[in-house]
Length: 126
Image (cartoon, rainbow, N blue to C red; front, side, top):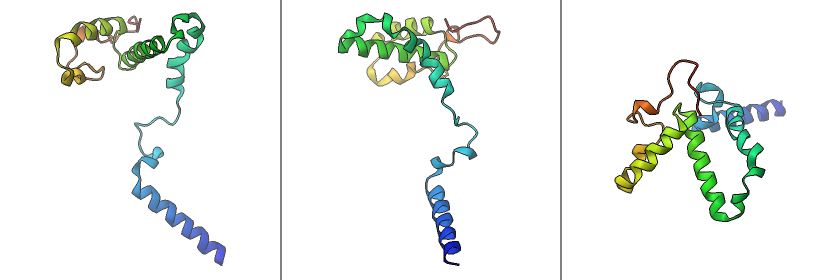
């Protein structure tokens, strides 16, 4: 009888923990992906080509490479044309105050439509 009470206690504690931390309920939120396959596939080209990028032997080169690569992959995930998006942010950033940099983020709806990929299958993220 003691074991049953203990297991019931454990179950109750677990339920209280899930109630206190909604983020622990992964299976109840359909927006969350349990797998990280998309993230791994997005860094695969970077991992394969890293030996070709010998300019990254300095700390500044590593930081610059990682920032640009992060911007490009985030643009791809948000269905933007990476080259056009880079041209847009590098052309816009010098003309706006730092407080407004959040308006250049790839998930902002106010970005020009010319940066977005079309709906047909012929558009690519290149």
